[in-house]
Image 1 (cartoon, rainbow, N blue to C red):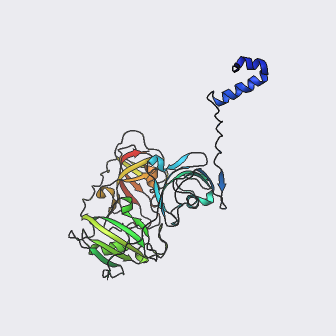
Image 2 (cartoon, rainbow, N blue to C red):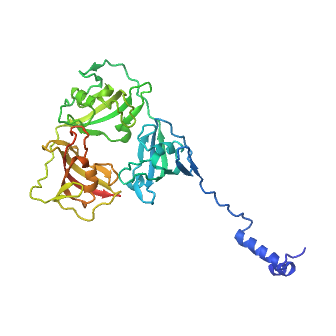
Image 3 (cartoon, one colour):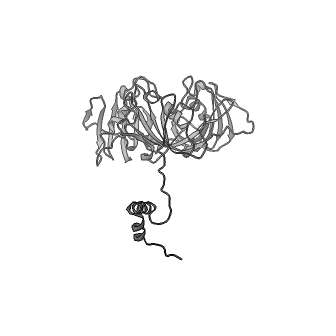
Length: 407
């Protein structure tokens, strides 16, 4: 048997050209056998729809595609055309949930999410006509093209109203029908009580699908009865019941959201609510700040504020998540809302239009721990709109405390 020639011998016999080819092959295979080179994966391809939405699927999902009426859970990061982040659920560590087909979303989002499967990651480039148009919104300028990096985490098809034993209905003077499904033995509800309930709301149509549920959020609703913090039907009907009651209300649209509708509720839609009354009691009123001997500062916009207690550190920046306690008063001193009474702070992303304009301006000035009185003229509050107990054109007074700043 002939011995295998050495590498040097092969070079001498075949010439240098063959040797360089052999060396190149050895280098490419890493000297470990005949491994083929890995072919680079193709870059994700951008698609453009007929409306002008550009989308790129970064990772294909393996679940279902959302349908109208489904609740979808999404993480996202939104960027302006210059690359700056203006909003991000990832930074807050809290995904968002919304209903498909409910007009809760930008048209570009609604269209883009409908193209994804559960588990997908994608990039949307949304032109102004599918975003905020020539109006802008919060930190988004007018006629701005937006980019969103999104991940479709989950899809939930809402349940329909469960069948229950037929219970006789009674009716209030204004036309709210009600039935007591389970009788409680607690306090009877009265105006001025702080009431805590769990509820599920249904569209009173042939589908009778869920449009909202405190159970799904795992967060009971707390409000002061008689302060118009809930729809008129609730204000009228709830004083008929007791703590511990489980009740069903059939609500005419004019005692709910009427001709305008709201979010997933179409205009002129009657509603049904299943409500469990968890607790009620007379809350301690908040103690108003006493800023009489403090200086009042007025900004160019007309915002006035009085620092009652100094905070420490740097003020927050746009995009930071703030936790705030507040009590809101009408000019005559009437309390219309208070997180202090409810025992829970309000949380919002600064500079994104989630709160009144006067709040977005003021909290850019305050370090953590600041206690201040804000005096908001109508154009920095609700303007000419009437909101609950707040009349149109009202100047509002808020005693606020910045409890925490997060990212």
